[in-house]
Structure formats: structure tokens, C-alpha cells
Amino acid sequence: MSSNWTRSIGRAFALRLGLWYAGLFMASAIALSGATYVLLARALAAQDHDALESMLSRYAVEYRDEGLSGLQDMIAADAGQGRHERLLVRVVNQRTEVVYFAAPPGWGTFDLSPLDQPAARRSGWATIDSPPDGAVLEVGTATLADGVIVQVGRSSHVRDELLANFRARALQVLTLIALAAVAGGFLLTRAGLAPLRALEATVRSILRTGQFDARVPLRQSRDPLDELGARVNEMLGRIQSLVLGMRGSLDNVAHDLRTPLTRFRNVAEAALVRGDAESLRDGLAHALEEADHVSATLTALMDISEAETGTMVLARVPVGLGAVVDEAVALYADEAEDKAVALRSNVAADLQVVGDRTRLRQVCANLIENAVKYTDRGGHIDIDASATGDVVTLAVRDTGIGIDPADIPHIWDRLYRADPSRTTRGLGLGLSLVKAVVVAHGGRVEVSSAPGRGSTFSVLLPAAVART
Image (cartoon, rainbow, N blue to C red; front, side, top):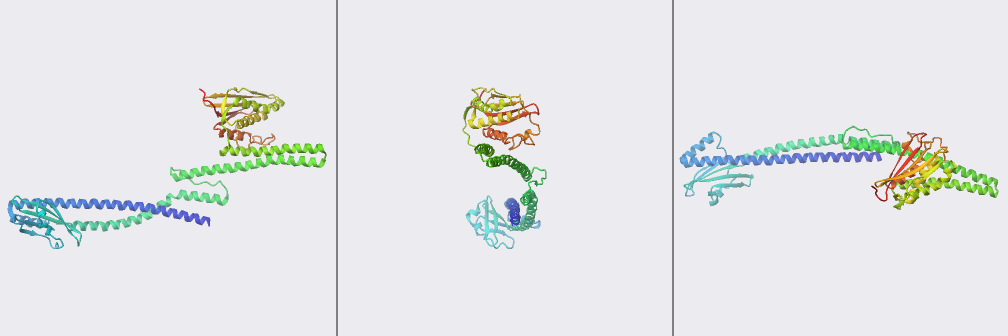
């Protein structure tokens, strides 16, 4: 049912897109046809007006020079040559008597009485409408020196018929264009939406199988939809990596929690079996230790999640980095002494950073704990800090076993330990927590290491006061 609904939505979207394309194409074609029609009508009207003006000038000059007989001869000659077709010619003498009138047949629809009005007797142009057929009669008037008026007019019938024929042909062409626009719109829409269909098919495959290894096929073009497919593939890759990481993390969590819970159960059972007060006290002490281990694992996971999601509350104040480092060193001084590891701090007392004191102490403690854990007997650990501009760099250097280059990109991952046998006891969350807290402070972490040559972990934090 969901698949049918998705396909229906896809078809509806393609239909709308195709109709939009066809509508825009048709609107453009109609606008172009309308502009062409207007320009053609204006051009024909200007052409008729120029021709009429030329005929009026010729007839007026001929009448002035040769009189009425000369005008009649010229009109007859023009008619023989086809130049006098559909022209109205009137000559009115000084006594307002029409001494000559010629008009083509069928002009009875025009009311010529306005031509006898005083305003029409002055040189110029006048128009007479014909309501029945919508034609217009354009009449030019020329007044000679002796008061004789020569009038020449032409109807717009021929022009109107030509424009009507143009409209009919344009309508036929627009019909063909509409069909082509609809067909082309759907073809182009189908081709243009191919990447979206491929994307939908990929998502549907992932939803059906639950596997994130499916990818959107790309056309290796700069098309925005192809770019979208590339970004979706990138997102799917990250999701797949995240899912695989979560699966590995869950395995590690299960391993880390199973061990203390098993020991918890064993000491409890042993204490119950023995039943004496001393065994019960020892059992409770070991049980509390294992419960603390489980609690520490869960707390670390929650702290990392809060820092990574931006929900960790940080009391940002200027903090003396030297004092924070000294407090962290004190926590592991005994452990380092037991391993004969020299633990030295060289951080200036006046060096300050901006951050949460408790969280920064947690960062220092985790880095020192990590260094002590992986430094062999007789080694040494040095903690230094320096300020450059508005950045303070805290470096923890050890002479421990080092890190294989293949493991360095993963040491900040949750529950990752480069020790496959997992013989070294620990949560595998210390470095992940360090990175999450430092990034939450607006800083960053770096590491340089080589197997057998020790490691240097660097934390870069905002300084309380910019230094030059």
C-alpha cells in the first residue's frame, strides 16, 4: 500500500511538472503570437496610411494642375493598373457641392455624412467606423488654394481580412504547439525526474531489506539532482558506518558490562556460600567495585552523548590550567609510582583557558590515565602547555608502547581499543570523552605516535586572554 501511495505521489508530481512546463511553453507561444499580431497590425495600418497619403497628394496635385478631367483620367489610369482599387475619392467645390464621387461597390455600410461636417473640410485625417462589420474607413483631406477639397479614403476591409486569416492560422499553429508542448513536457519531465526515481527506488530497497549498502546510481554530471544523489550516497555511507560502529560498540559494551556483572555475581555467590561476616564484607566490597565500574561505563557514554549533541552544560570561566593539571596528576601519582613511571608537569601556574573546570580536569585525568596505563615500567610522562595567540596547547607525552598508524584514525571512537585481545582493563571510552568535551569547548585534539616510541596527545583550547 505504501509503495502504491509513493508511486501515485510520483505520478502526480510528474503530471504537475509536465503541465507546468506545457503551460509555460504555451504562455510563451501565445505571448509571442500576440506580439507578432500586434506588430503586423501596426505595420499594415502604417502601410495603408502611407499609401493613402501618397494617393491623396497625387490626386490633389493633379486636380490643381489639370482640373477635374485630369483627375478623372488619373483615377482611370490608376484603376487600370490596379492602384485605385477600393478607394473612396470625393471632390467638393467652394460651394460645398460634391463635384466628383467615386466609391467601390459594397461601401454602403459606411455613413459618409461626417465628411460634410466643417471639421472634416480642413486638411487632415478622419476615421469612420462601420459597426456592422467592424471595419474602419480612413479618409485624408487636402484643401487647395481656391478652397476646393479633395478627399481620398480607404477601408480596412482588406487589412482586417488579412489579420483574420492570420488569427485563424495562428490558432491552428498554437493548437499544434499545445500538443507538442504537452508531449514534450511529459518526455522532458520523465527524463528529468529519472534521478529522483532512482533515488526513490534506492530508498525503497533500503526500507524493504534494511540494508544500507544500496546506492543511488549516478550519471556523473553536474545536474542538481545528480548532486543530490551523490549527497544521499554520502549520507548512506555515513549511516552505514554509523550502524556498523553501533553494532561494534554494542558488542564492546556487552563485553565490558558482562565481565563486571559476572564478577559481581561470582563474588556475591562466593560470599553467600561461605556465609561468614568477613567473606560477606569482602564480597560486598568487590560488588561495589564492579558496580562502580558499570556505573562509570554508563556515565562516560552519557557524557559523550551530551557533549556530541551539544546538551552538555558547561560553566565557562577563566580556569588556571596549571592547577587543573596538578589535580589530575595527583589522582594518578600513586599508580605511576607503583609502575616506576616518572610523572612530571611543566604547566605554568598563570596559564589560563576558558572552560568548565570540572570537565577540563576530566580531560586531563583521562589523558594521564591513558599514558600511565600504556607506559612500561621505568618510563616517563611529561605534561607541557604553551600559548600561541588565543589558543592554548596542552601536550601529554609518554614513552609508552605507542600506537600503530592503522589504529590512529580510530582511537577517538567510542569503545575502540587497539588491543584486540582486550587484556588491558578499561572502558575504551576515555579518549572518546576527551575529544567530545574538548570539541564542546570549541577546541580540537591531535595525536602523534609510533609503535615503541611513545605517543603525544595534544589538546588545543581557547585561551582566557589572547596572547601575542
